[in-house]
Image (tube, rainbow, N blue to C red; front, side, top):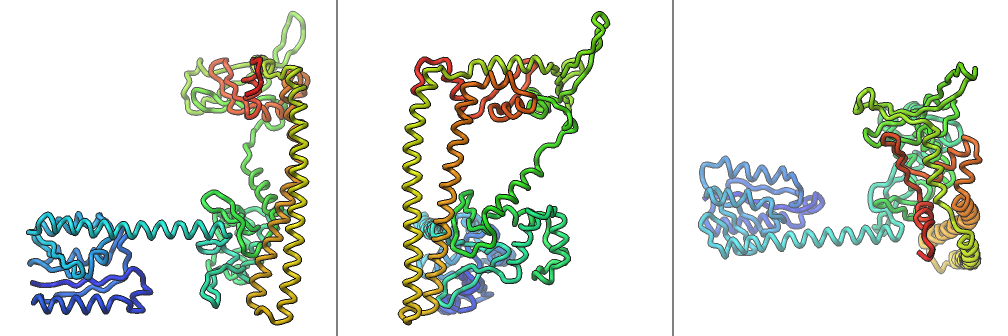
Length: 503
C-alpha cells in the first residue's frame, strides 16, 4: 500500500529548530519499512491544528481524495493530526469510502473501513483528550493575560508611539519610540490647543512622514488618527475589554490633555439645528413615538381683527421623514400643551417639608463621614508618597555603594516613579470628588424640592437646561407626551406619593 507521512509542529520556530519533525519523520519511515508500505510522499509543516482553515492539511486530504488506490496516512500521534472533531467528519468519510487508513504510531492504532467500534472510540477519545489539552492551554493563556493586565503589563502589540522590545533577561517590554513619540504628543497638542482638524492632522502626517518614520506615502488615515486620539494608553491607562487599568510604561501626555481632546471630539458630534438662533424650548428634545422622527418646532403669528392685535404661537410637528403618517395624521401639538403636561408632572415631584428636613440631617451625617474618609485617604496617600521617596533615596545610596547593579536600579526607580504618579493621580481624584460632592448635593436638593417652581419662573434657556437635567427619552404620541425622568429624580417622583421614604 502507498503511504503518506504527515509530520507537524505547531509553530514556525519549532520547525526551524527541528525540535520534533526529524523524530516524527524517522519513526514514520521505520514503521513503513517494517509494514512494507511504499512511501508516496511526505508532508512536514508548521500549522496549528486549531485553525479554521488549514491549507497544508487540506493538501494532504486532496492527495488522498485524488488517489486511485487506498492510502495509508502515517502520523506520530492523534494530536499531530487533529485537536478537534471538525476534521473527524472528513477523515471518517474517506475511511468509509475505503480511501484511507490512518496509522497512529504512538497509540498503536489503525483506523480503516473495517475498524470496530472499540478502535473508533479510542480515536474519538484521543481527539477529545487532544481538544482538552488545547482548551487548557487557552485557559492558561487567558489567565496569564489577565494577570499581566492586573500587573499593569500590556500583552499585545504596542500602539503607535511605542515599540515592543525583549530585554536581556528575555522578558518582553514596551518603550517609547523615539521617532513616533514626538508625533503623538504633537497631534494631541495641535488638536487640543491649535484647533487642528482630523484632516489637517492627516495632511501633517503625510507631509512629515519621513521625519516620523511613517512608511505609507499617504500618511496616517483619519480613522487611524481618531483611534490614536481616543487611546488612553498615552496618558497611562490601557483599555482591557472595556476596563481602564494603569500600565507601567512611559506616559506621553497628561490626562488633562487627553480629557481636553475628548471634550473637543464630543462637541463635534453634537446635533446641529437649523433653528439654532431661535429661542425654542423643546427644540431637539422630543421624538415621535410611532415613527422615531424628530418633532420640530416653529413660531407662527396670528392676527385677530376683533382686537386688532398679533399673537405668537409655537407649534411642534413630526417631520414624518419616513412617510409613516398620512398627510392629515401627522402629530401636531402646541408648546403650551407640552408645558402643561410637564408642569403637571413636576408638581408631583416634591419632597415633603418634614422629609426634606430629615434628609438634610442625614446628608449632613453622610457629609461628616465623607469628610473624615476624605481626610484619612489623603493622609494615607501622602504617607505612601513619602515612603516611596525614602525608598528612592535609599536605592540611590545602594547604587553609589555598588550594592545593586545599574540595571536593577533603573528598573526599580521606574517602578517607584510609576507608583508615585499613581498616588498623585489618586490624590487628584479625591480632590475632584470632594469638590463635586458639594455641587451635586446642592443641585439635587434644589431641583428635587423646587422643580415645578423653578420650571414655572425660569426663562426659556433656563427651562431647557432644567429639562435636560431632569428628563430623558421624551416621545410624543398624538398629543400625549411620554416623560421619563433621569436618576435619581425618577426615584423621588415615585416616592413623592408615599408616606414612608425609607426605601
